[in-house]
Structures are given as C-alpha cells and as structure tokens.
Picture 1 (cartoon, rainbow over the protein chains, first blue to last red):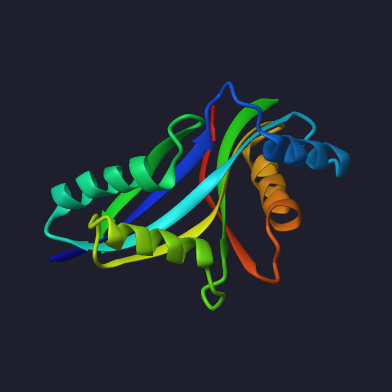
Picture 2: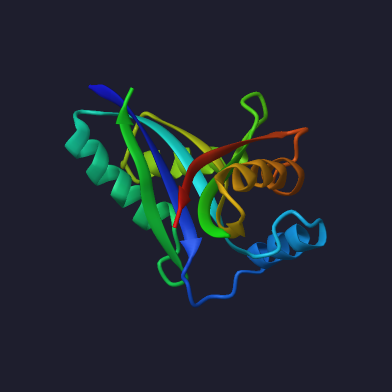
Length: 85
Length: 85
C-alpha cells in the first residue's frame, strides 16, 4: 500500500452566474489592486489517501470527485495535482 | 500590458477543525471509496488579470490573496500556479 496526495478543484460551469467571484472582482477594483480582473471561485480539496497503487488511487479519486465532491448539474471538477508521498 | 492567470487556494490553518473535510472523509468510508483518507477543504480562485508585467502581477496577486481572499486569523493562502496567457 502507498500513500498519495491529490488536489481537486470544483468550479461552477462557465455559463452559471458566480456571485462570489463577482464580489472579489468588485473589491479588487474598489481597492485599486487590479482594474481588469475576472474571477472564478470554487472549492478546493487536498486529499491524502492510502491505496494499492497509483492506478487504483487515480480511479478512486475520480470516483470521489465525481460522486461526492461535485454537483454535476452545475459544477465541473478537475484533479489539478497527483503525487505519491 | 499583459494578461496573466493565477490560481489561489485558501485553507483553514492546520490546527483548526475542518468540518467540511471531515464530512468528505466519512462519506468516502461509507461508500467504500477510500478507507484511509484525510481531507483538507478550502476555497479556490482562478483569476485572470491584466498587468504591466509579471512582477507587478505577482505582487498584486499576493496583495489580493492576503487582504481580500483569506482571513489571516484562521486561514492560510497559497498561490499554486502563475502563468502569462
């Protein structure tokens, strides 16, 4: 058995209004940090697991992201990083 | 002026209880996806901006992460990716 770390991000689909991102855009402009800015907000999960091998870990990580972490109606998910630790 | 994409993650500090992460751990075990799992939940921001150069963009991105996106009392932030697009 080996230990793996993976990082998963879930985001609202492009066509869905993202009020949290819009708030960050407004504040950035008001504070004169960035004037031209587009923000997409989402959720982050740093996940440490034990699995037989990389193939098993990757398959199960996809299952977790798809069935537990994201709502497929309004969200997409992305496994942004995967490493043995 | 150039366009940059950066990705920022904010997470609760290690010592602070993370109920959202614990829920994912419980569900993963109940669904028999991963039995041994540790989850740290957080927030993700994908940010596209226009800035004079990379140095300016990086400095302002740090300012945004520190002053707008994270609560320094209970959270840490990390700029996980930075690229000119």
